[in-house]
Length: 407
Image (cartoon, rainbow, N blue to C red; front, side):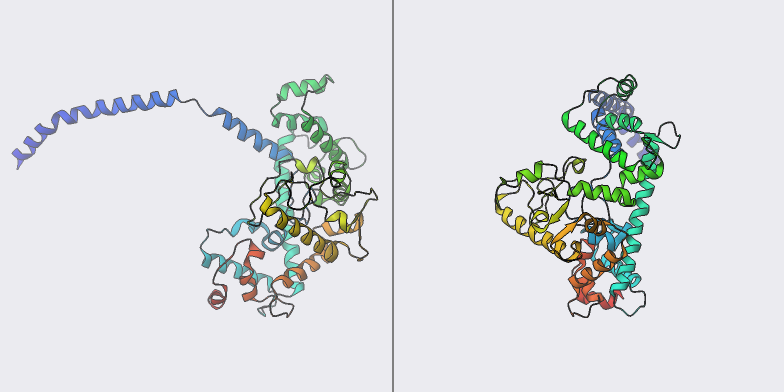
């Protein structure tokens, strides 16, 4: 037995001796390959710049607010006020049984009196609670962003400090911009960036509580990023939306008809696929709600006016029809509170106020009506599961068979 091991060792000896050399050679080849490939510094810098820009630019989308910054309807509003901070908890690839159980847990939380039915009052209370979660989330994010633009940590951010950070996020040298501002020299920026800067400065002035000093506190900076947190800034946001900026209003007269090729922001086809994504900051450049006659009010034709956009021909007619239908319903049933065919700035402000309890009750009734198949003005487990796509954004199959086991 011993002799067999010795013989085997003698046969494998030369190969064993080669092993360290092979490993050394392999290591050398890998090292040469790694050094030959250039480091991806540009993508790293690009990601850092995008992250910095996202930190200091007011968001185009506000969770729990009915309209987008550019005047489009917030398509995800119902899910936002039903799911709150658990907004991303229902994905298509998640195991359906687990998602159904999670939805029924939410149902039981909304159903305060445990009668296995959700009333409008119960849904109203839930909507207010979930909206408050979005508010809290925005406040926490704003604190982080405030620290990013307050380098000296004095608790105030000047317009010049913000301007330096904003232009740095656009690829300008932070030192060169700071020096130019200090020396009162003209900054060379492209036309689009200049337009965004001007709109940001208007917004900065509005967020600066009297007496105006162009210095924003942490609370004022929150209003600058999230106008829904301040009555004054919400009013400013409404004026921005209603205001006729010229481009959209004047272009409507010569705009192509339904189904034609159009250029626009974030328009989706029947499949839900966005054919052109909104660009960051686009809400700071132009409004999509246009007060065409300049009377600071919106008529139904003005509110449902089609945006100028790019869509595929075969989808154009459907998109146009859905756009008009959805906006007409929103105008007549929810925004025009006195039903006189005109929406004033006050009515639009009330409609957009996420903490308006009357709006929350109306929204609760509307959400119940969507799924209330037995017309008892309440939501039952079967109805919530059947219309899960409306409440969560995900369609959960086999809803009827699952109700008993989920409870």
